[in-house]
Image (cartoon, rainbow, N blue to C red; front, top):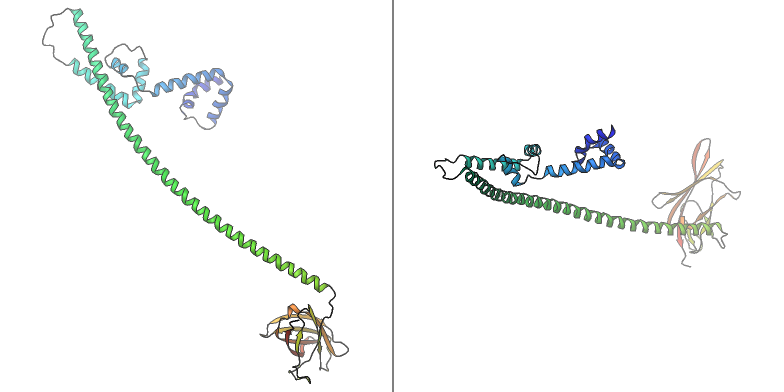
Length: 330
């Protein structure tokens, strides 16, 4: 029962129109059934024969009602119903037969009936040869037309391939440009990474130095109020820091008699921008404040230092200092 159902589907399987689950079912069955594979071979042979044009001699014999020994007449008729070219050639043969049969017989031949039949056979053979030549010429013309169609299709395909090649080349150039941009971006990112690594290394070295004991670290006095001249002629709060120093200790002298529970401090640059701030500042018993500042926080320039006191929820400025930082060359 399975083979009968498969055999019914073989014609559609052979001409490529069977799709989906049915095609998979037929393929799986053919893989294990020798009988159905033989049936498929016969079907493929029949399809290939059916797709071919009928021989010219077969068309002539069929048109003149002569015996056709090379092919079944039912198969010929089935092919003619689907092949326009063979149908057109059959029409030409039939027109030739009508012309041949329509000639007037005005002269009674003085020959025997046997010779008349021979003469008729000769005329059939001659007419068949003429038709074969005529059909051959028609086939040549048709071949020329088919060749022109084929060349036109080839030209169109070549044009499509050229356009496709142009699109591929444009895409290739675009990809090359994108690849170049990516490489440039990668190079920039690599440079930024290397610079960041160098900065991290410098910071790590600086942290390591700051974590180590500092020998000969400078300690400088700072006085509040307006700048005054010292006896030796230097300006008060004009601070010179050795170039090798990593930090400096500032002793902020205070003249304020008022004491507060909490103190805070801020450092401002010359543009009054905050450089640093901190809380929990302690006032020493000597009436001053002490702060140790990394020299990297105070590059050469002018700065302001403010100290605030906190009492009963109010913040009051206690002292204000103005300093100038200079770095010694040695």
